[in-house]
Image 1 (cartoon, helix red, strand yellow):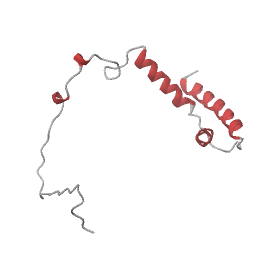
Image 2 (image 1 turned 90 degrees about the horizontal axis):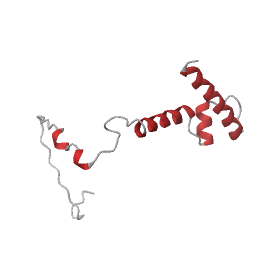
Image 3 (image 1 turned 90 degrees about the vertical axis):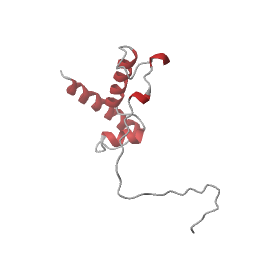
Length: 103
């Protein structure tokens, strides 16, 4: 059987459990039942667990795993400042002491 078939079976089982917990009718959608019971949908929980395992056990991508401080890349190497040309000039006046009120 493929993953979609397993996913459908697991969702069906969770739906029956949520119907019993919420004491709801069978016509209520699975998403609504998850909200009512406060349970996370099982397919999202499985994806979350899979991602966590990928990061911790298989070392994930280079952005997800822990690195020593000496191996961090400085942000200044990646920042590109793009200067745009605006037609209008803007002036900002900030009064933090409450002396200027335009009420």
